[in-house]
Image 1 (cartoon, rainbow, N blue to C red):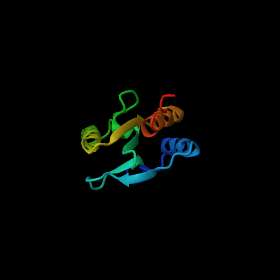
Image 2 (image 1 turned 60 degrees about the vertical axis):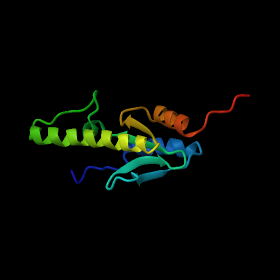
Image 3 (image 1 turned 60 degrees about the horizontal axis):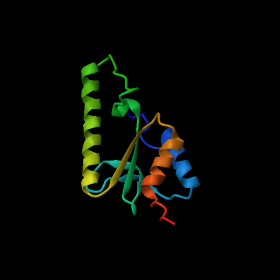
Length: 127
């Protein structure tokens, strides 16, 4: 597992490129306020928007997650803990007034970037 990349994954980089090219500035892998050893993939601190791009295997995607047969009990416990930690982090941030956006790694980067822009940028005032 130590060889498994946890940051700067392909989907993260693709979304970040799209956001950056549209003029948006953000922080990456920033610590979750008040929760040691947890980070947010893409953060917009002023807008208080936290974006997570979750891997299908590690975070239990309902469509693509697989369940290893070797050492199945250990893996089930490990993956369940990951999902529980995700929920706990989301709840904590929401209680602190953050907007939390979670996406799966298989989602189209353009769609993810569009959703993030909508959450971060204020709506255009009526004419």
